[in-house]
Amino acid sequence: MLKKAYIVLLITGFIVVNSGCNNYSKILKGPDNTLKYQTGIDLYNSGHFKKALQFFDLLRTFYQGTKKGEKLTYYTANCYFQMKEYQLASYYFHQYQQMYPKGKHAEESAYLQAYCTYLTSPRPELDQTNTYKALQELQSFINRYPDSPKVPRATQLMDNLHRKLEIKDFKIAYLYYRMESYEAAITSFKNLLNDYPNSKSKELYLYYIAKSYYLYAANSIPQKQKQRFEKMVEAYNNLLYLYPKSKYLPELKPLAEKAKEFLK
Image (tube, rainbow, N blue to C red; front, side):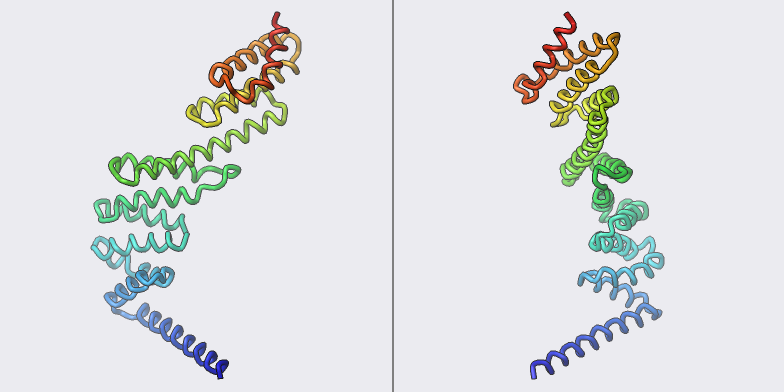
């Protein structure tokens, strides 16, 4: 009996769903744009974003430049955002700003465009084109809406992206170090200090500069060693001055002493 009731429910549900789909199809193909508009809005409000897009795609051009057109463009962008299709969402949030620069959702669309691009930023090992694009869009949002309550969040997102770029650059510098390409490693770690002056990893970069100079000097021809050992001692003293309690000093101190012995 229960099994029979379950089958009846399944059949009923199937009929209801198919009936709904058939109705939507008829409305889509019909001539009544007002009905299409209301159906699309109802689908959007009930969370059926993919179905709602079918109606919005048909109507955006028809209602372009009107209040309904503004709503349809914003809702289209948000449908893609809710569906986690961030590149398309970013495109339509951008389109909203171009078409309705003084619209109700202009500020929010500027932020969400940048946020969607932020969400497409890949892990540090991969190409960072979208990371740079997200940084530009976030900065543009901050410049356009400096008093927006979203500015602190946008600033935090930018910090996250800068940190990702820093990690990528560090991995390159460290790879040079592991490959014993000490001159390239030194240059790369120095660039990290210049490009990220407020980095929390500054102590680590100073350590690798000093260590790389020592190994670079130790493996150099005699004519080049003096200058490179001098650089090592200078790098060690920089670390000592800035981080007198650095955990790296016990390792580097005997190396600095050997460098000073050579320079006597």
